[in-house]
Length: 400
Image: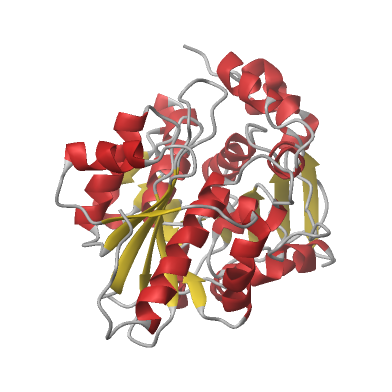
């Protein structure tokens, strides 16, 4: 099968721009074709002997392999068999016959970039990184080979300050694009999902690639969220699972929010997992029980305004050893969340990693919006976590 040259099928904004730039930043919606654009450019640079030592950096080393190397639009998939591109997983290395090499890295271990030298790099989903500025700076020190080192950054934007800073630099060229530009190559199911986002801030960010600033009258600022990432210690005590159950399980139903939180020895709270999903009650209840044992949780806190004892009984039908506390919403979501917002501002609560869907709800929720399932589950869990901490020497009384 003859491969059609990328230049003949790509849209103009998927082709590397002309000019004397150091960084090409592609800020585009999901499904735009960012990965393919970067992979094809890296491939051309390597095959044509323009660049010989290339860094491929994703949020984690697993994502670098699954997306940048082996993904549907990754380097292995888009390369001709005649090019004989080889992949050595144990060495995290892609190698072309002409000697050009690309090495995979995870931004979670950006210090690994201290030793090597490169003449080019591709950084994927940059806005997901816990430490974007530090990763980019470390990479910049490593780009010291050749006459014109270049970097491609591909990402769906988030309102982090460093992306805004990059856009003002004279050596950075920014390409903007939307998901709908690539509509003919997107599945009908994906396009159908986009319809549910119409009119929301999520549509603006994820589809139209707009960099959103803080909305008025929301509880959390993006700054609060951007500064809340911190790796937790190996052991966290008093783990609590918060559950905000969906009352139905059809296509239009809310998700069931399932958030796992824990506390370190200094009294700092951590969000350690988001297991939320849209499913039947039996499926989400099974997931909650599994998480209870996986994290050695102290208690499951479940909102039961509409479900009553049925929800507790459902969990116990799966495992009658789990400890459950049912809570009822006597005040507004905003009133319940405000004390937790203050704890974020005081650096009392951190996220062990980026929880994209939860954080979007935190930064965009306004009274009257669609019920924020993940946010509710997190607030219930954190409220109980700090209550346990304050009463550590008192017996825990459960309302069942």
